[in-house]
Length: 136
Image 1 (cartoon, rainbow, N blue to C red):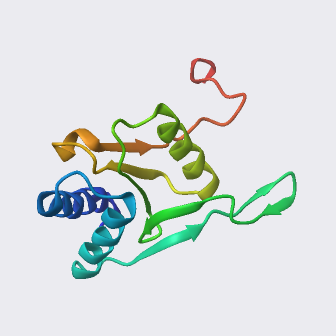
Image 2: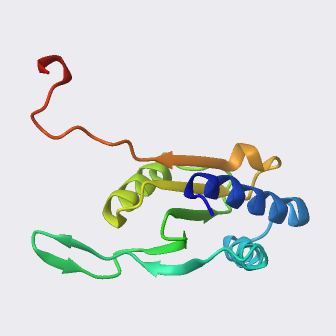
């Protein structure tokens, strides 16, 4: 499976869950149903994966628990809240940086139309510090 297609496939799985259940359940219920959809599609994933990283030369273990890491390429955060706080987006960016992944989805199932509850976060490649395109 092409990693580029992965977000679209996962979004379709989320839409299937939302179309079947609608809003109103707990985050855990949606997470469990998404796991069922991913298994049905035979998409490899890890659930509840601990976020470990190095800080000032020290190993930091289980700083967070990641809802889904799919094919070691995509992080998915499942929510069920009235509106998505900005801190969820910022948190996803931090988790992506620390995990080494480049793309994440935040999916809030507590909305009438799921498309409005899906937020894709991609880390952009940064230039090396001290380089400036205008100096090249």
